[in-house]
Image (tube, rainbow, N blue to C red):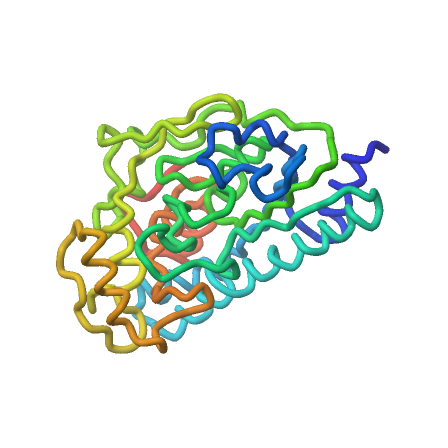
Length: 320
């Protein structure tokens, strides 16, 4: 068994993750300065990427909140689907994997936080990590890392999607000076076809995700390029952080931003007005909009949620 196979077996078996791949540090050469593997570990050779699916029962709790008006069910989704458990699970596994590599093989390994537990600043730029589409606050872009490691495709809404789970998984990263056997970037058929689907654009309450003929970002990934939607991250923040009462799930929320396309200054002013009691682990107020992730038809969504009656969403029914 090779060293790479030993590490992968440890991640899949001992750490109970669902998938794992390895990308070379050079796959991130197109990323901005400060967000490349060698920026957090001089001499970095490899980026180990792994995923953990979010249980269907947790996802459907968000439907009870969004579709049935059961605000308390939203706490289930917050704890187990968006903020606490999935990210904390990956958070600790990154530490365990880094320790395993250093203690077993003697190479340096850095666990890279990619969820709410990393330190961020409550200003508009970079935007909070939970939003998803932009991921500006991440040290290393986890979705692009997963693509580079062959774990899935990049969807129109900028999120990692897999055939098995669509966008409903979390991603973990470990950077190491250990040279490993590298997986090829994702090269299968495009999983997301915005022209044929477009559900993420249609369900976005702020129209932050353009339709398929809208503005495009060409992102560098693993020495190649992938076209994704140009997200209006400021608009996304209004819904995700409930800067208007209409987006609040629990409790009374004041209307702080009425614009559908707020400026950086408007967002900064709204941040300042949010009381500390409205903030969560990553120091941002949020109410977990996440509709572009919740209603994405990929990952056999219709069979798992619509056909079982767990979701009432119907646009003619999101079909595969």
